[in-house]
Length: 238
Ligand code: SF4
Image (cartoon, rainbow, N blue to C red; front, side):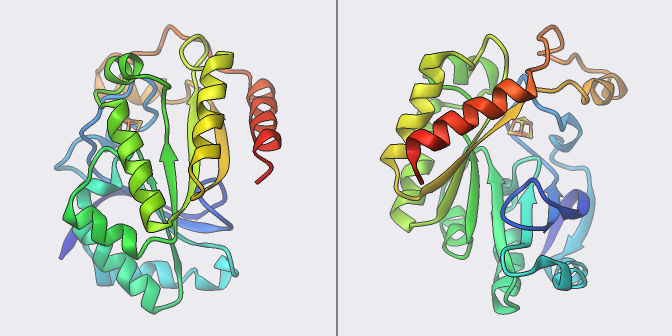
């Protein structure tokens, strides 16, 4: 079958273990205020490509992957194309290339279940700490992302919890405590990554002619965010 791809990054070091071929999937049902890829959200855009053809492109980079690297499906929301990714990840698994999903966890069901069974690592965005904020700033339920985390635990998928830190919205002590508690509770979680909210995407919103919902919010201080992450990881001792 074919999938819809927004774009590629041949060797990324920020989305999953080691050096990875990043596939940005087209389409996302959410509308996060902090979204830095608003151009990936449209369901019907992007390049159409078969799983076999995409695998051939990925395979060319195998010498750079080492033992940790591989392929990461990001987006957009990769779970929107779970059947296609199942085909791609099956080829990767057969070829000895590790697989990673960068997801909001907003979709479940049989296709996602099958996909998770052949996924080595999941980067799960836990964007906020409560139902109200989740509903207001993403269009998705907090309970849904917790259900997804439960599923990862049940399947024993290695998981990184990620959060984009948005000043004034999710950077309080109680937000940090909430994330730390989740990372402690679920044994599938081996790492927490905090990313500073940035506004490099403003130009994309202008090009698309849509308002940037968080355009009025200042960028997060990368040093402060890194320290917060260190504090959490120190507390976890994972
Ligand atoms: S889940 Fe990701 S791609 Fe989708 S709207 Fe949110 S930030 Fe954007």
